[in-house]
Amino acid sequence: MTSHALLGLRSGVSEVRALRAHYPVRVGHLASGSLAVAAKAHGRACTVLLSSHFERYLYAVNEEAVDWLNANPYPLSALPEEIILLHSQDAIDDLGRTGWLKRATKLREFLLTDGPLWAPASSTGSLDHSRLLTWMKTPKPYEVLRFYRQYGIDDVFTSITRSKQARSELWLTINELVEKRNNIAHGDMQTESLPSSITTYTNVVVRFTESADKLLARNLRRRCGTLAAPW
Image (tube, helix red, strand yellow):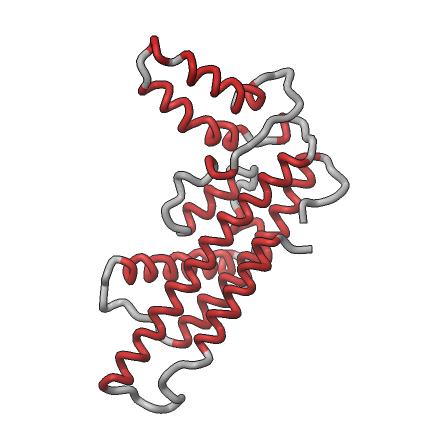
């Protein structure tokens, strides 16, 4: 089984591969003039598209995991403390910015939405997926690491690989992809991606998400003590 988020990522990757197959320069030919501009734009477009699909996967799998948690009773102890802290962070910060005599309404709201997550006697609570990724700006490796850590997976890159070389390849390739995407988005006209690079980026994104998807499902099932995994 795979998550709906991964199915969406696969569709996105198919889109990138279809675009990659229509590289405007034939193999063995040198591009010049407008053809060179088109070739450069092609690589830049593939880079932005693939990075966007990768980022969307992380948001989508987070939403899917939270929906599953909310739909299935689980012991409160199953939730890593980092998730509860992140869930409450904005509300607590907002309380801190509110004058003491005006906090009553916000305190009542906080107790309704987050109180059950902190109550020792509570067996479950309800999470809002949108609160858990407000800190993520781009899906660079450190951010990806933090995302899975909040679900109790200490090092996702180590967990889904068998060698240091494989981990390094995943880390460096994802970082390069996202760095290029950021440079392109900020108007850097010098940034480009050759067809071979697009192929490498695509293969790494697929390899990472396929493995991480299974890992997260197993982790949620184990933590919540359910017979069926979320996907």
